[in-house]
Length: 137
Image (cartoon, rainbow, N blue to C red; front, side, top):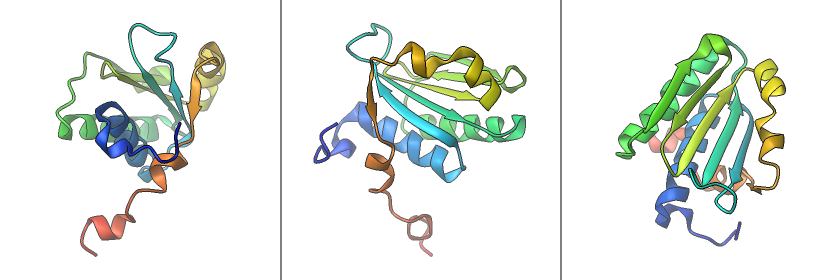
């Protein structure tokens, strides 16, 4: 990804960035972003991350849903069964996959889409204001 790209002005990347920030704020682990637009007719970006427990997975899912709702991004499909170890939010241009580590190891979604261009989450996270500044502290 072009480091000088202003992601806040690209609607798709804005959603990716806001979701990544929200997931990072909730301590998501092993956060990855894949641009799969060249290989997929169903989406442009995958956001993939781990939660360390079922409650953590639920919290990550709720946070991603909150961001999508605030951005008026319709969710076309959702699989919200944290007990399965994998939750999915399909917002058309962006699909968020949240896993428990052992489930991620089983499905190896990262490997399945290995030809996608990886975008470093730091490209989004380093541009975020510290949380205290966002809340007026």
